[in-house]
Amino acid sequence: MEAYFFDWLNMFFRWIHVITGVAWIGASFYFVWLDLNLREPPGWKKDKGIKGDLWAIHGGGIYEVAKYKLEPEKMPTTLHWFKWEAYTTWMTGFALLTVMYYWGADQYLIDPSKMELTQFQAIGISLAFLAGGFAFYEALIKSPLQNFPRVFGGILFVGLTFAAYALSEIFSDRAAYLHVGALIGSIMAGNVFFGIMPAQREIVRAIEAGEKPDEGPALFAKLRSTHNTYFTLPLLFIMISNHYPMTFGHDHAWLVLALICANAAFVRHYFILKHQDNHQPWILAVGTLALFAIIGWMMPMPANTDIQVSDARVLDISMQRCASCHADKPTSAMFTAAPAGISLETVEQLESYKPRILTAVQSKYMPLSNLTNMTDEERAEMMSWATEVK
Ligand code: HEC
Image 1 (cartoon, protein in one colour):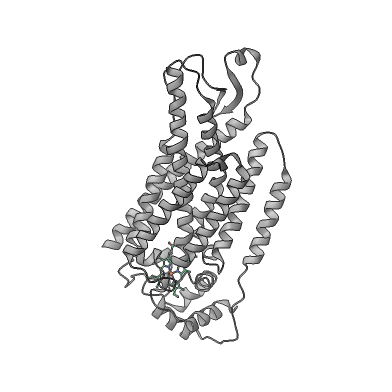
Image 2: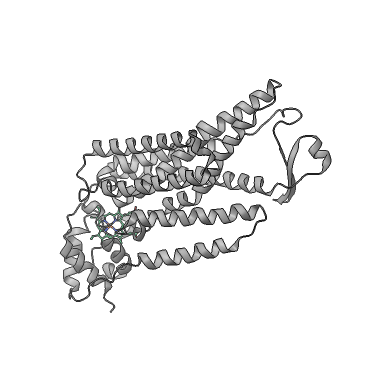
């Protein structure tokens, strides 16, 4: 019964997390695009303090958008703020982390072959990592380094890569990736909560008090917002990566993460420049070549097919190591239905999932946290059987 409610909570929070995440990143993409596409306005608008304007057509109507350098002539009665997209994405993400990786720590967070942790210890390390990583970023952005974007970016990248490496030594492969994502997401939400919102409140306060708003906080908010822009594509990659054991299950998963994320941020850079009419297609070309290089480098070694493994033997291994979960009616108390819809109780079923079994077993993603104690010999046998072409 517990497993049934676990699945529902998991799905519910994931669903809302995706919905709010779409709203947040959608708004973020839109405003970055908007800001960079503002063009010089006509003189009469400039006289009103407008620094850029833009015209667009969408949904059957024409829109005129104007951005003020600082304060408008008079404050409008309704001013729309964008913050709940970010806050709710973070809150549902944290709820999902709690359900899946804290409640389900034995299956998803802890990997005894890396570190024998109790559920309590694992959760403690996870929370300490997120809090520590967040504090590191906040200290960095408040330091004079904020004036040196490239050095800043470099330190952040090295820090996150180191975190990915350290986490891969402590948690399950999948949880290691997820934690880097959770940290990036927390930094992004923190940028909104601790940086952008206070700056905006200050601007509004000053305008309402009839003072000249200070440009400093606005520029600082812009810096945080720019960081968020470069985080979006890497973060989205980490969110979907848990469907692809070839990434988080790679022998050098932390390096895979670093390379793919660096490449994704680089590609984001192309779009940022393009919004400003600065076309640099070479960035996309280099990004694509780099991706091919990564794909080539990551290619798994073919399994040793010298060992002859009969169908009966592989079914035997599966019944022992896989079918407690992968069955129409799992005997494992953790599942009420076959995980990922994959039952592995007959040779026909094993046959039909060969390529996915190969990736899952080779990357050691399966058996989940090796809860069924699969041996290296059995792994080699299963891989060899799954590699055979009939
Ligand atoms: C303790 C339970 C458990 C055991 C034992 C287990 N699995 Fe899984 N398996 C899962 C879960 C849970 C998922 C779904 C993971 C997810 O959410 O993506 C899964 C997913 C898979 C997938 C799909 C992965 C993908 O996304 O392509 C394959 C293939 C797979 N398992 C094969 C195996 C094989 C082969 C074994 C035995 C060697 C095995 N599993 C043992 C729980 C288990």
